[in-house]
Structures are given as structure tokens and as C-alpha cells.
Image (cartoon, rainbow over all chains, first blue to last red; front, side, top):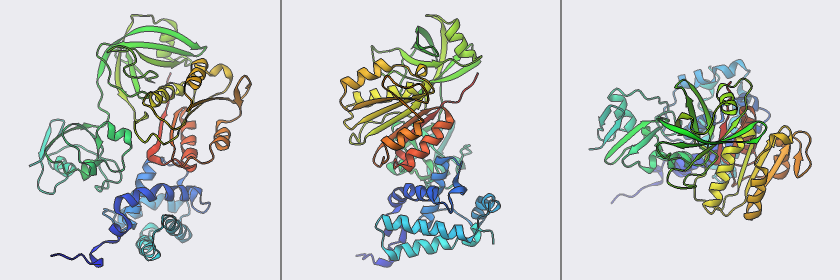
Amino acid sequence: MHIMSAATITLYEQLGGAGAVEAAVDRFYRKVLTDARVSRFFEGVDMDRQRAKQKGFLTMAFGGPHNYTGKDMRTGHAPLLKMGLDDSHVDAIIELLGATLREMGVAENLISQVAAIAESTRNDVLNR
Amino acid sequence: MSVVHFGAIRSDLQPGESALDGLLRNGASLAYACKAGTCGSCMVRAVSGPVPARAQVGLKDSWKARGYFLPCVCHPEGDLVAEAAGSDARVGAAIRSLKLLSADVLRVRLVCDTPLDFHAGQYLTVVRERSLARSYSIASLPGDVGENPEVELHIRRVANGRMSGWLFGNAGPGDRVEVQGPSGECFYVAGRQHMPMLLVGTGTGLAPLYAIARDALRSGHRAPVHLVHGATRPAGLYLRDELLATARSHANFQYTASVLEGGGDGCVTGPLEGLLATRFPNLEGWRGYVCGDPGLVKSLRMKLFLAGIGMPDLYSDSFLPSA
């Protein structure tokens, strides 16, 4: 008999998998669009494409299946670096991600894990 | 053994292999990016065969209803035949009638040689002399009258417009055209009848909205259905009597006409954005439909999204003008 221990349940499963991504993406997207610190980076972009990207990002940050590489992160954010993207904006995004999850009633220890995964992309995003 | 067909390509899927990987291995030309069911780049449409629910997670209801799925997360059980998204075919059609609805909007009713399978609110591309093509939304409902009902289109007069110039000036009943489609994902999907609906459009953006609203009412949608039609001046509004009559006959249907200048006579005066912000400050749990001028559609979509409508419940159709 197989007994599943807590350690075999991934972060992604604990958060609720694809359903949690779907539940989070609109909340998160609304936050970044209306946050004065980061909204300018999202102005004028195609909403459907941007939402799909946000789902990809959330899936990764939730510890789910993804194919992101450091190179993708660097090329994807290169135009934003020219617009002045820096550490303060990465801080804001991670903060808004946490606020989104908190609104959804996610436990703080899981939010910290998500924040840590998002944090791990910082140097790629900022091309350092 | 599962088999996936895409055009002329057949792929016998290996154990654990996705439909996308199998098709790519056999030389199919398909766009893809995340391969994880999130980005939607590889979306195709099922013609026949079982589509696993997992391959449609996150897609709009209207896409699901038309059989769209994501092959990158599709592991079919059995034979699945797919086609590229948006493949269309043309059929012949004859003009049945032409009638002015306002100085600049012409109602054109067509009868197609083959009955069209469409959802109210989708659009058709009308093709004349094989080379001139313009897209127009369908303002009528499927199955209105008879087995091959007339399809109603609302044509806006465009300065020096080749198609609209012909329709307004020279076309007559019996004239032949071809139609391609239907296409478009902006339509009513039955179910979830507790969700209020907000339909907003300008100009002939009213055509799909008029159809979608009636489709919802005919399907027994119980929650409120609000239709807001905007124009620069009252002369740009049309179908007012029909919409007011619909509002009288359906307790859950409400119609608002809005103009930028010269209101009165039941018309609200002022920008559409302001009207929506005042009347509909919180749209959480609603479905939204936005049709008309591309700039306005883009701005209103954003506003409705920020007011609480989830992106999967936000449908839109931008009318790109061409002469």
C-alpha cells in the first residue's frame, strides 16, 4: 500500500494546479494594470496575449509545468529594460503576486514559496 | 493506439506523446510555444473524434463549443481529426432584400445556397466578383424562419467604400455574392444563466450585439441583459423601436442609447466610458460583449475587465474599416 506523504505533494498541487492559475490570473493582471509603479510596462499590449503570458508566469511561480528558460526571461524582458525596468519593479510584481494569493486565501508558507520561485528569475529578468 | 490527423498529416501517437508532438514529428506546420497548455499558440479545431477535457482547460466557452483545443496537452483516446483554426469555405448567396435602417446603415438580407451553421454574433465575409471581400456581423438568429433562413447583415456606408458603395447604390434583390465563414468567437454560449450580461457597441457594432442579446433571451437567459448602443449623434442610432419593443416584452432586457452630442428623447448624452463607469461600477460575475470601432473596443474591454469581468467571459469583435 502506498501512503502519500506531504513531501510528495508538490507546491503546484497544494495551490490547486491549473485551476488555481486560472483563478489567480485575472486578479493578478488587474493588479499590475492598476498599480502605478508597474502599469506603464503593460500599456498598449494585447490583452489576450498578455493574459496567456501571465498564466505561463503564474504556472511557473506556482511550481507547475513550464518550459521557461533563463534565455526566454532575458529576451522577453529586454524591451522593458530599455523602458527602465529595475529591481523596484520586480519587487512590486512579487508583492502583487503575494497580495493576489492572500486575497484567494492561500496560506503564508505557500505564498513564501511562490515568492521564492518568482525571486529566482530576478537576475534573468533584469539581464544580470 | 491513438491517431491524430491534421490536414494530410497522420500521426500514430507514441505512448505518452501529445497530439502536438506527434504532428510535429510527422512534419506538420503548427505554431507552438509553451507546450504546457497555457499560451494557446497551438490551438486547432477538432473536426471529429473525442477531445479530452484537459485539452480545453482555460479556453473560452465559445471556443470549446466550436471544438477548439490545445494539441500540446491533448492525449486523445481513439482517432482525432483536427483542422487549422479558422479554416473557412465559401458558398454562393443571393440578396433577398435591401432596406435602409438609418441614413448610413443598410440592412442586407441574404439567402445562402447551402444553409449556414452559425452562432448569432459571428461574422461573414461577403465576396463579390471573387476579389472584393468585406466582413460583416450577422444580426439575425440561426433558425429564425424555415430551414435555410435569411441571414441579416448591417452595412455601414463607408466613404468611397467599394462593397458598401455597391450595396447602397447598385445592388438589388437577386444579385449574387459569395460568403465565407462564419467566423468569430463573439457569441452567446448557453448555460450559466445566472450571469448578467452587458453588451456595448457603437455604430454597426449593434448588429452582433442585437443578435447575441436576442439569442440569450430566446435561450431563456434569466439574469439581466443590458444593451448599450453608442453613436456620435442620434442620427447614428438605429433599430431603436425594435430594441424598445424587446425591452417591453422582456422584463430582464434593458436598452440604453447613448450619444456624444444632441441627446434627449430617451438618449443619454456623454462619453460611453463615463456612462458605463456610473451605471456599472462593479461587473464581477458578469459576461461582457464589446463590438465596433477598434480603438473603442480596446479601451472598453480594458475598462470592463478592470470593473470585474473575467477575461474568459469577455467577448469582443473589432470592426476594422476598409474602403
